[in-house]
Structure formats: C-alpha cells, structure tokens
Length: 315
Image (tube, rainbow, N blue to C red; front, side, top):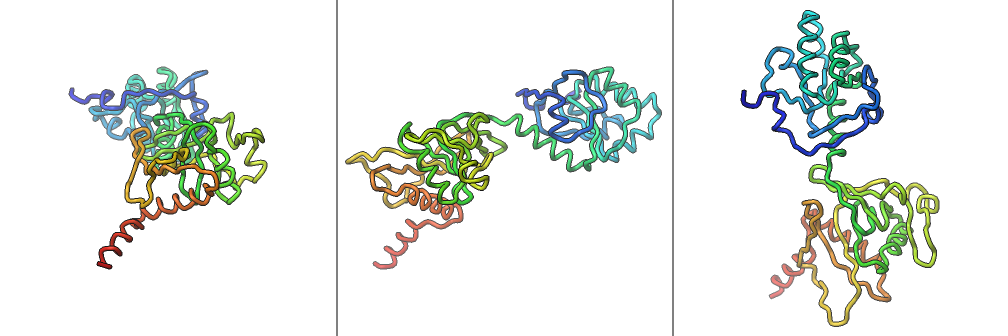
C-alpha cells in the first residue's frame, strides 16, 4: 500500500552514533542494548506508536526513534500478552533505531523479548514524553547537521557571533585578542567548525585548539587561563562576517554604508562587511562600530537611509 511503513519519505542522509553515547547524552537507562551497538538516524523526528498499536500500520515511520508515553504504555499493557508481543515483534522487525519509554515506566517482558529478538536497543527515562522527545530531536538535529570548516576567527562581540576572515597574517588573531581584552569573548581561532542546524549556523573550535589563540611574536596563549572563563565560549551562532583586507591605495571602499553585501555559508545568507586594514586604524573600535551597525540594521534602522532623508528634507 502507498506509504506503508513510510521509510522512503524520510531524509536519506544516514548518521550513526554509539548506543551507549546516545544513552549517556540523553540520561537514558538501558534496559537492553547489544554490545557495541550503534544507532543510525535519517531524521530527527520521533514516532509515537499509538496508531500502530491500535492496528493502523500504514504510514508508520520506522526510521524514527520510537517514544512510548503514558498513553501508549497504558494501551499497550491493556493488550493480551501474546497480542502485545506480536505488535512489538512486528514493530522491531521493521528496523526502528531504538525504543524509549518515558516517565520511568517499567517495560513489560514483551518489550524486552521483542527488542532482544531483533537487537533493537530499549531505554527508559524519568523525563516526561514531551521533554524527552524534544531532547532526542535536538540531539539528532545536531548529529545530522551539515558541517564545514573555515579559516577565520569567531568572536562573540556584544552578543553577536562575528566571523573574522582574511588572508593569513592580516591580524585576525591580534584583533580577537584586543576584543577579548575589551570584554568580548573568543569562540575559535584559525579554524572554525560551522554547523547548520535548521536555518541557524553554529560555530565552534576543534577540540584540540579550543580556547587557544596564536599571536605572532608571542606564540600560543590559553585565553581561558589568561582572562578567565568569561572570556571564552564553547560555541556561538554565526550572525555576520567581517572580512579584513589590506588597504590598497586607489581602491574604493564603502564610505556611506548604503550597500548590503552578503556571504553564503551552508546555504544561509549572512550580512558581510569588508574592513580595510591600515596602520594607525583602531580596528577593534571599528569592528565594534561595524557590529553595532549590523545590529541596528537587523532592528530596521539604517544611518545612510536617515542621511538620505535629511538631504531630501533640506532641499
């Protein structure tokens, strides 16, 4: 029948995670899991199997994590043991990633028997159904997210995640150090791992160089140790791009701010500004002003538009 078990309607990208790591991350109690088992996911959506238990098996999303809440468990335990096992046996035979039972409800022997027969991990949790469902979806969303590694520096400037880009040696790390000294926060230096979660870009540093900053002439410094934990972040949304370029004589740079350049990362369009680097310029203050201007634009205010209105009204 059209749509039966609905496997083909799910996304096709497959990502796997160790079953033990999945349980640990979501604080699940393992009732059964094969030794060394891995879980494969193609979607972050979960499935509440009430209709399947009631006998309506069309459109059953077997590729999703199966979550039993109090309603599903109440109905399941009202069934004849043989009938319940037959339904669970069929469900597990379809290749579901795992089964999670909410509200600390103890599964009946039929659950464990079906899980063991088809080697489907079975978990329980003290969390209510809605919360564990949301937590599972968030965990898998992060796992399935597109990812790219970019050369640059990611800094939290007044609450906005700003990706500083530019050729090597132009001074990105030095600017980041000055920004940290002025109360802003370092996320990543040199190498920035960016993930797309829904329509949001999240950036972080590789574990090996987290909280580290390379300053030419000084070497590697640990920003967290030097300035404290308030000076760093593990991750941050990427809200805008500032490209540092060498100031070239005769080159034309934006002076009014009426243009609205953008840069696309993983299909997400971000506002972008090009900042020329020249001896004597206080780049840190310029960047703070640029970030403030970006924030005001997001709020609907544009200084160039205001200037244009003033010029019109003065005529």
